[in-house]
Image (cartoon, rainbow over all chains, first blue to last red; front, side):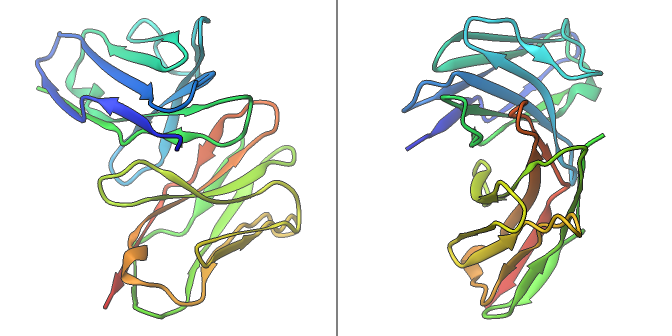
Length: 115
Length: 112
């Protein structure tokens, strides 16, 4: 149980275009979803926290106009990278939790490459 | 700010060897501590956790004890298997936020 999927698993786009990444909780209702970014050989850095039906809370230094997060339902959150540039190339990972618990269930990640 | 430091990898061991991956933390309060594991091609999975000082988390033969006096949460396993090859992340969570702060991860490679 507690499976989280991400789509796509990898994406290549041209500089200046926008890319949407989906995160779904397959077998539970996720009251909270988290988006992380991971650079090669580095840790996961939390970008934002979103609760269903509310605006996302962004971490310091994360541009909210560039990384648009929508948590429209209890099973789906999306991250849109707007006007992507090569420096946005990274591994993006989502996680989900429910019921105010401290356990997060992670998706497999999405690798974004911006040319 | 709050942070987690863990030993750099990769750690390469032979099967049945003893494993220790060091993890220390800095926090203003009393965090919960976690170890997550990431197998190749998969998402992070919770391996074990401890929520207060002197608690021991354990799972699948892995153990870690929450040591407040040394601000540490070292991961140990008495006899590793090839299937334990993965990246291990130490993390902390402050009670009120539910936000995880991760260490940089340690890659473990177990050779037959």
